[in-house]
Length: 375
Ligand SMILES: Cc1cc2nc3c(=O)[nH]c(=O)nc-3n(C[C@H](O)[C@H](O)[C@H](O)COP(=O)(O)OP(=O)(O)OC[C@H]3O[C@@H](n4cnc5c(N)ncnc54)[C@H](O)[C@@H]3O)c2cc1C
Image (cartoon, rainbow, N blue to C red; front, side, top):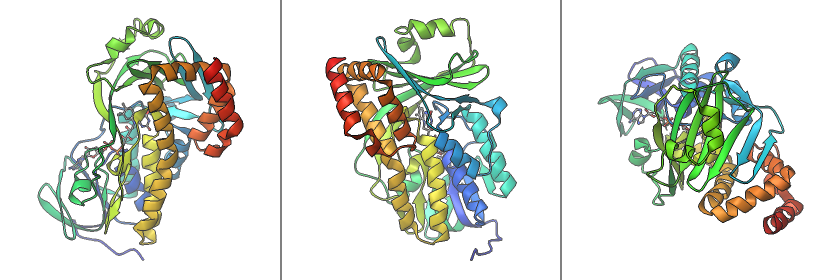
């Protein structure tokens, strides 16, 4: 039975942070009938460094929030293409398509949906602490039954709730900018270099997002373009429409994602390397799993679901980080996959949840092993 919460200083569910994870959790909780208040220190539409690709299963999760992303403000992609200086391989998603969309557009759409459902939102409002029965926002206490920490990678809620992990995990550096140019591919293109990966995502009929994910702190997009005459040629004459913006891409996991009535979603609850393109999908899955747990008044079920959500993205991230660390392995793996593209298609199907990890099978492993040696 959902309690009635009338006062401005009370919320049944309070969400700290209004990025994609916080807004998705707020929307899903409102859909389930909870009274929800959200606060974010920034103002919408909030931008953030991102590759801006949503995988097909992420789109299905967005649809469950009652949102259809407008086709004229996004760009569908049908799969992923990997290449380096010597080899290239592409595969289509086995089901559906992914969508490239500017982060600011996605944010505004989520804000509009939350507003339509009656989520009480405070923008420009910093969460400054937690109290025994709620949270402080700009120094003012708000009581709540559940506190959802969706305040991103450097979550204060995680820290205050005592959910921090002693393991730092690994980190890389991400940069992105946008060019006004008609997309030249139906794929998200990932160019592998010794410096990191350059990811090109079409985000509308006339814009592409170019992101770099690198382990080198001083490498920027321009340094990497120099090694890619193909991209330089494709972008020649295209107007640069956003400034290069950076963020940390972290890979870390927490031993627990809740304590008492405080619970974490999105990057506050751990993350996988950005190269997977799974961050938004995971945040959306967290929202759905969290609301089921709130309905059952049992956050332990959320903890279990959270682990399951991270399993495949983590496995894929580890595989790709291995390729990032070893140029020798990367060159051989890309050559092997380009000789046997069906293996890449199977990996993509596993990545998007269309096939279970075991589907790679003994045959796939042996074939890949053989091509790694001989290709
Ligand atoms: C280079 C790069 C490329 C990426 N590419 C992709 C991709 O292609 N596809 C994909 O799915 N994912 C991608 N990701 C991951 C994706 O961007 C994240 O998973 C996603 O942003 C996580 O959303 P979030 O809501 O958890 O965190 P955030 O988006 O960081 O939101 C947290 C919010 O909390 C607010 N906040 C923080 N502290 C406080 C406070 N004290 N009080 C109030 N508000 C507060 C912030 O203002 C912010 O709005 C990429 C990441 C990087 C770094």
